[in-house]
Amino acid sequence: MSQAWMVASGKGGVGKSTVTAALAAALARRQLPTVAVDTDMGLRSLDMLLGLQDRIVYDVVDVINKDCKLKYALVQYTLSPALSLLPASQLGNWEDISADRLARVVHKLKKRFSYVLMDAPAGLERGLSTLTALTDFSLLVVTPDDVSIRDAERVIALLDGQHKPKPMLVVNRVVAQLVESGDMYSPQVVADTLDVPLLGYVPEDMAVLRALARHHTVLDENGPARDALLRISRRFVGEYVPMPPLKRKRRFFFFTRG
Ligand SMILES: Nc1ncnc2c1ncn2[C@@H]1O[C@H](COP(=O)(O)OP(=O)(O)OP(=O)(O)O)[C@@H](O)[C@H]1O
Ligand SMILES: [Mg+2]
Image (cartoon, rainbow, N blue to C red; front, top):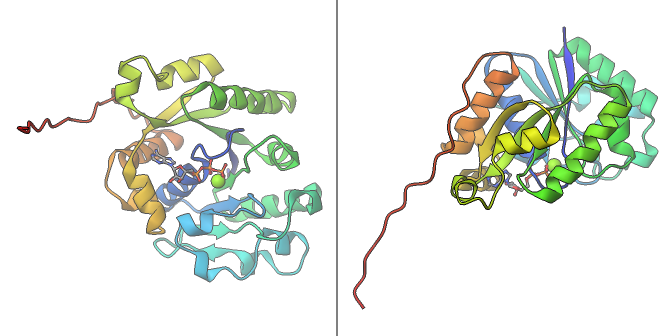
């Protein structure tokens, strides 16, 4: 049975696209037919995160408007034929998108792929409520701060209002040292506050920025974020993978005379 997932957050810039791209690439590594759908109209980013920015001809709005067939808008991931991208439109916006037509596109995608991962736009506007109606399950990406948690509560309320299942939670940009000193919520505290199951957490990691600069996913950069996202992808498909304890970075002290 194929599944449509929405990756949402409420607050912008918390790592939805980073998580979507890495999760999609991880599922494809397991040969699971997956499509990543960028729904951030006007602000697309998944193409860059997957290194496919030079290969886009058509986008999701062209498909919705029947300017092209779905198969011509799908861009195959260079590193795995199991993953395709359906890019967002750089010009269109959610106000022009017919919910019924998008539903038909998602229905077609579900026939073709086991996992349809829809990277939602930030905010609680029309785009999010349209996607909420189309999704079977959702992944909530939250950073461990009050603003992100409060915005995530609004997304949970939206899902609840549409009788959708509780989302799974990914807490991103966790800094073990700050959690230890009491200056940042632990991932479990965030999950308990939101009352949703914790799928995993991703540490703050410079490798994520390196991956962004190099136009590939975090899976192609060694580091704790990559390891965490691989664990998350395994839990996502139902494997039992224990949550490792938060690790502080080792510190080196240099004593200088002076
Ligand atoms: N674990 C992390 N460690 C370090 N930087 C990160 C981490 N996760 C995300 N980032 C950085 O945070 C920024 C925002 O990430 P991303 O674009 O994935 O967020 P988003 O939620 O999709 O944003 P938007 O709401 O604008 O769509 C990017 O520069 C990304 O590289
Ligand atoms: Mg994004």
